[in-house]
Image (cartoon, rainbow, N blue to C red; front, top):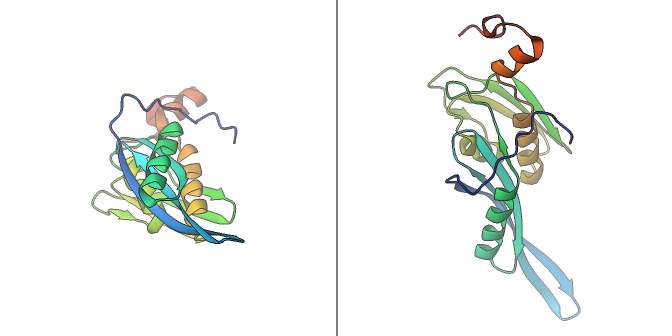
Length: 172
């Protein structure tokens, strides 16, 4: 995905909170019987506009979560937040999952389900209306939500791109 807006962030100087989105027990059948392992999807964020997701796989739950957190810290993005909500409406898509994000008035809260909620809360968004359409697979929903957040542009960037005053882009 080649997008100009992806702002990579270094994880060393930031304090993160992690949220476990989903954990699955995976079975591999061998001639000696069944081998169980776990895969965990984890979202990390500093609740001030930085978020990342990761997948960890291991024989034990705690190890899988730890690997997921490490993986999440390796691919972080910066998201523009304005007054606790998003700058504009945005759709995101990944595989069969489609998500729709819409800014909301202060006091609305995070109106989003499951995997989307974890991502939006980790980013630090306080008020948003969100809808997940299509696949409800947590992997795809998390990636679609991140995809939508990557496409977000703040009014300052748009004003610079268009070469106009900020007031003509955004009145507030």
